[in-house]
Image 1 (cartoon, rainbow, N blue to C red):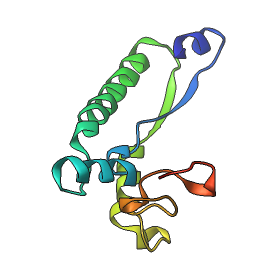
Image 2 (spheres, one colour):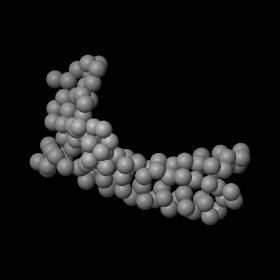
Image 3 (cartoon, rainbow, N blue to C red):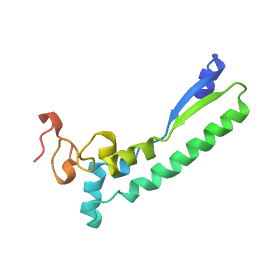
Length: 118
């Protein structure tokens, strides 16, 4: 996709890596059920972290191969993890429990009453 945009004249790109979904309330609740720990779910981390590293390498390779290729990247994983671990720095009071939902950490999506959860 990037090469196709480049071929049509695109030279400036922005990339976001994957966020800390492994630390979301739904995955933390799942981890609690599996391991008894409500910490980040390492089963998901094992996919997110290598993906994010590979993305950085791929973008760096493109920058070397494509003349005029400029990019910026945002480390969404670290940014989201900072908000989860230090919510008060970002104007939140709580970040490890969802704002709505059911179950542990309100990790079962049922916000807005559109999904019935028994």
